[in-house]
Image (cartoon, rainbow, N blue to C red; front, top):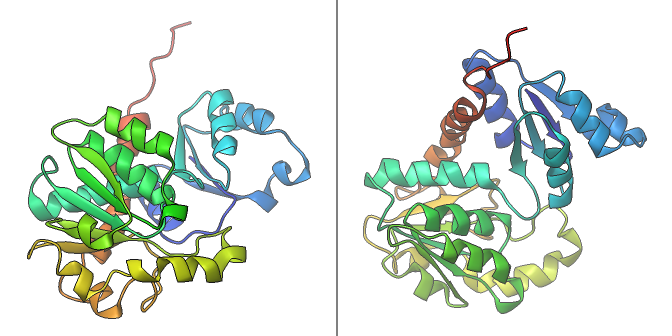
Length: 270
């Protein structure tokens, strides 16, 4: 399996490499400056050629359009390892963590507070489809894309759904989990100070966690900045499920690989 990285990674790279090896495969890590893409090869040609070599392609790209062009021209499964718009592999691990903690997904409430980014998008899409009530609290200027929220709401099952608010306490009320992400993601550095100012009321701290259920857990997709988007006593405290959540990237992705490439395709007999 080829793992294509436009952006640096810790959890995504290590979990995919380890998972592929544990399942008997061989990961090939390709950073952007190590391929002919850096010298002008088209994404179409890149996908057509790699499809002849590997069983699947994992892509961690800045632009969603890069992933979609590779997928449109690939003859093998293409997995979104992260784009600026979506982070589905993270959301799979998040749902696995919730099911481990509470024994189910349908009927749970997940509150997400902070930037309405790619993680928020994938939590809405996958969470609502799995029967989770996903409550997103962001500043007005950093709300998730309305189209994604509408799509998630339309695909909801088993009582799942999506609500958007600017009030973090309202989102966290009676939640089974309260989730946050970094305030300044890759590519947002130019707006770092304005983002920190807008997001300061959305810090995941003990006071916010008190609005959730007594058995609620704290979640963060990492890397974290203790004291900024999450308080250190929450990240490292008794109610943190962050480290189980990080480990579950490995297990969820192995299940995804089993689903997509775990069985050899049927080939015509010559």
